[in-house]
Length: 69
Image (cartoon, rainbow, N blue to C red; front, side):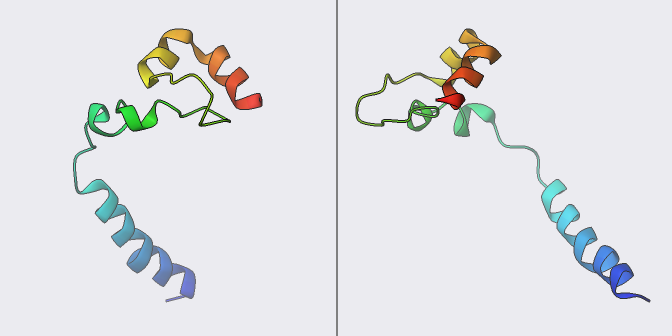
């Protein structure tokens, strides 16, 4: 058995099993929380607090624009 076989069969397989063995978390409990209201802020003291839901409402183009600044 080569090192690559050992790596994929013993290490990668176990990692994938660990990652996929539990259901995905509830997005409302980790993404849509007040702590993420400054997700795209560059100045945390002065920038507007925008919730993740508001970013979804604003759309992809506005998210990209916020990330370019």
